[in-house]
Amino acid sequence: MNQSYHKYTAADHVMWRRLFERQMAQLPPIASRAYLEGMEKVGFGADHIPDFEAETNPRLRALTGWSVEVVPGLIPQRDFFELMARRRFPASTWLRAPEQLDYLEEPDMFHDTFGHVPLLTNQAFCDFMSDLSRVALRFIDQPEAIVQIGRLYWYTVEFGLIREEGQTKIYGGGILSSAGESAYCLSDAVPKFPFDVRTVLNTFYHIDRYQDRYFVIDSYEQLYRSVPDIEEILAETHLISG
Image (cartoon, rainbow, N blue to C red):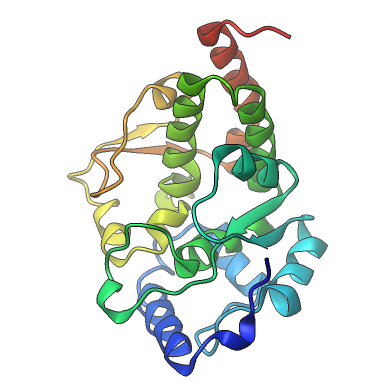
């Protein structure tokens, strides 16, 4: 599939601007430094929807070897992890309607692109995602293991927090693309725990409301270094060897 960039309407570009400006009005002091720097590196702005082939992918390939791969929406787990293992981030191209401004049942291109793509400029984070995907493919026929990997992906790539210079910042794409959760997650009233592989693998999450808890990493390198532990724990739990 391709993005079919010419099919975006003026209304689509207006929606992108509206969402972009709303998020960038609050993210600079609370988002991860790597994310904000990545926003500049990939050249995202309010004036137009990113053009994957002409703008985004050439920059990403030069920086980390990754690219954005257009998909029709949610795709099968095997397909998802195969793309990620090959350093291709799956992204939809449809943009939400005005009545969907604050809630979507399925991620749109603003979530996929604005929320996730800037961190594809960070090598350690990219290496974490590709290595985690290779682990997932090893366990792809073990449903319980894939559920656990899904939890880890949820609490890191989608809803992760990071400690930077003594402050808790946001790096999860699901939070970064959500106006409400960007403020909610940093409230002192919401429990936050140090990232621990075994704990995260066994922590349930919600898909229809804000999370009850969040996990905080110390660095993207810590996340990348956790992959062997993830694989080891899954192997001992699900009795897979080799």
